Length: 272
Image 1: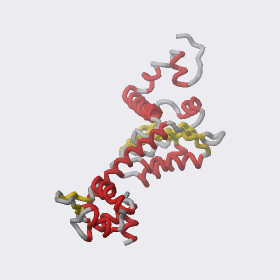
Image 2: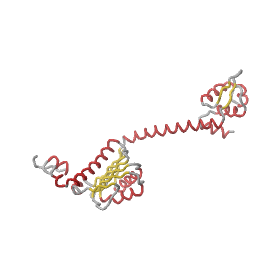
Image 3: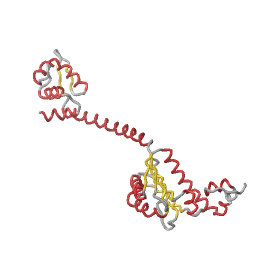
Image 4: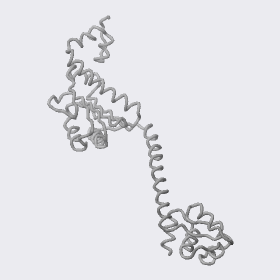
């Protein structure tokens, strides 16, 4: 019987409550006085214990003179406990996860070294459930392409902008053809790589031929949104260029010193 008491105690029953309930299962209906004698629960405690068992839905009061008590059948009680614990666990999973995410929203992880940055990117790809946005340079394309093929289901939507690697496609792919990669690399100081998943998480990395790679990773919704919009705008620029031609696009900014700076990162001495 000690093993039964031990398991009931794990479910929130006190030792006296265990003894009283098991005593009722053996003999019922009985008065509180009779139950005290049969179960070993002190007379001074028996009515308080029975009240707690009634609050737990484990005992019925039988209207009689004197008042007697009966147990809720064991199978019914177990189902009630199972349902209550399932509801509690579902509630806690939701609320605790939200608290954890609130904490993570304030965190920006800093990562250094080419290997560690690529590992983080690969792990983020593996966590993708619905949608993946990529802006990738040729030196990193092979690893990222392999990670997408290895980890993602066919129904996950993938959109990518590739700098170089003209013969490669990763999901719905747009090759950055309007401005040469050298110009973009000079403006960003390296191979700026972005991976954003599910509107929830983003990693922004920069690889360089002259120094070790660095990256930041976060769940911050503002940064996830900005990074995803960056890729969306790059995609639209490529489609506009494809539709109207690079010469007409050049004409929009080549003679405007402010737009020259926007596009190249270099100040121009010309006057608009």
